[in-house]
Image (cartoon, rainbow, N blue to C red):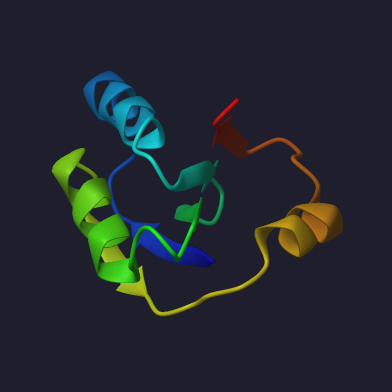
Length: 93
């Protein structure tokens, strides 16, 4: 599953480090920032996490978000839009 968040202020170094830690949580597959659209999209394993848990993890990293109830296929989004300039992708290896 994927969920999208809209954020206000550009995340700083501290928030980006914290998001890196969120990426390490079991069930988080990928995190994509789109700086132009000010969105954060999180791909996660719905058998281990819920949207509310993912939202809590993002908030705990210090990212102020407006939750957008938008689930979609991240792979199709990236295939359509690519990972062009303005996208920062953090994915589990």
